[in-house]
Image (cartoon, rainbow, N blue to C red; front, side, top):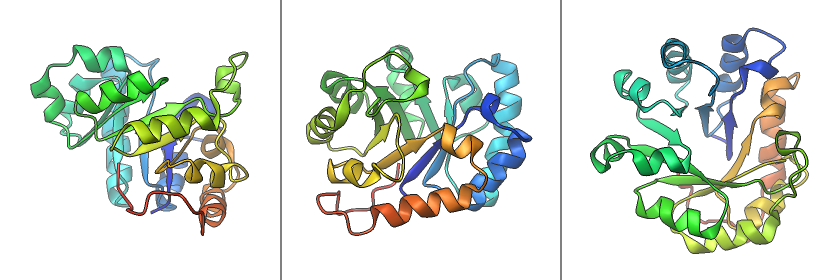
Length: 212
């Protein structure tokens, strides 16, 4: 397993999405977050069923995103919700997921996520990224503050690349989230290997290989 979570965006793929997903899963990322928010609930459930099967065949965790009803119906172990949706989910439903995550944009968000029972969180955006064009990045100081504020694993998101990955790990993050790179690169396995190589020997990172 690597220290990279793949966040999907099928609109970026230059090939069949499930074929791309299989190539990514075969390279063993830390997990896949199926983030396809533009779909209807029924469309998402149909895609999620196929994505879960692909990921399970490679032993890669697949975390569903934004659709708790679909996640429950499919027996998914992992769910990622935007913080407003997470707040609205009952404690009983939150506790039904072994893996529960949310996206945080402040230290206060991160502390709330932990109080709501999240097992991990994503924090960003850390670096400039086309996904947040025109919005200034929050930077490594923000990431460091979030990591120090909570006891659950923090995954950095936003402009994460092999070149800046050592600084992400040195800030205390468990790893990084990558969307466009893994959706568009020629060789997902090579990209994940580049991240692994970049992260080797970084000091100041969490000593325990905590999963999502």
